[in-house]
Length: 496
Image (cartoon, rainbow, N blue to C red):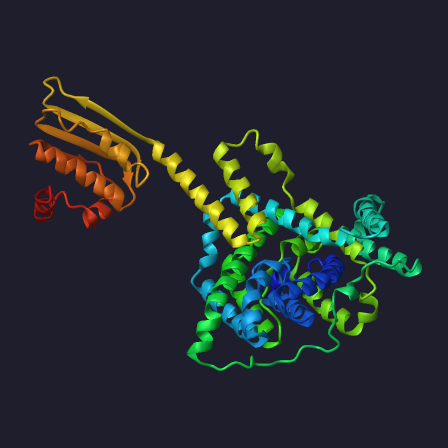
């Protein structure tokens, strides 16, 4: 246990410290922007990012992943803040945390195994597009200095790592932010800075309880928002954890992550912050900058509050163009370029699922809806594909008084019609034997189909024998089937 704790925290100290610093700088304008989206004071997003990042470093199930205030969550808060105010948002944040902890104990994190690779790829590509689109306001109706600074920043980001020795030691995004800030100060460029985004807090957050009445009416107001925030937060966190798993070739505990996100959101709500979740953009920055352990997440949150409270005079001078360059790098690095090349060799259904996920997420700016559409399409395509893997072979004896049917494959709602249509009920037979040794019945629809076949044959005076049914299929057939229950068969026949 001690060894695991040491590996999570101190196996990559230098890389985690530098990466956490880069993330902290990049978090500031995003936290302010997300606060503005939600309709609250910038300090609400900044306090939330500090609390969530620090708490999740201890409680999360994915070392090296960054959690803070996010745009996806902020979009869900707009109506609540507008109609009921900040205090109800803080109460909703606390309830969101409770729901997420419950999801962790009910092991809902295991549901990630139902999300196909094509949905994850679509989610990643959509998020990369959204990250890039979020930078466009900073690049429209601006002077040429902004474009020059952004281009120079991208040049440093991609060329600095090529330098011998030092290029591998210091994260290029950190170098970009420092150099571009110095250039802007020395040349006194009139360009947009972090200070123009909103007022930075000048005090540390304090513990407080939301000033709302503790009654059913309050619960009725906040519960729908809390459910939405909990679902979107867990979905984005689980997807981000899966992506970081792939980037680092390591595993993560999804159910622990659910609980950790819940505890972090409760902490944020108690310290005046809004609900948040994992951030794919910042998590990718962290990994690309060398962050791997929990220390990087902790440092990101700690440095964030230290910088905005004690170093605000310097932080305010960081040009937005430098941070835009970093986020464009994140967008380019996040997008799965292989997915475009793979479209030529992947099945049409896989491409449809991936593209649909991208289109819906980008169109709605709602990750939950996009992933839901992707999972639904993937499930339908899978059911259709498996439904075709059903073979029914038949052979009659020499006198053609008996016929045997051999069922090979899966019988469920998508293949039940194919199953029933394979039998000839008009053929004059004394006996029919149905060999189910290579078949599996999965649901009530398949059991109903089997009942229909047996009852139709018996109605024609044909004896029916079922052989070879496996134990799992026999269990569901015995429980829901009626063909061997005379009283139920009589009811069915009486209805015709």
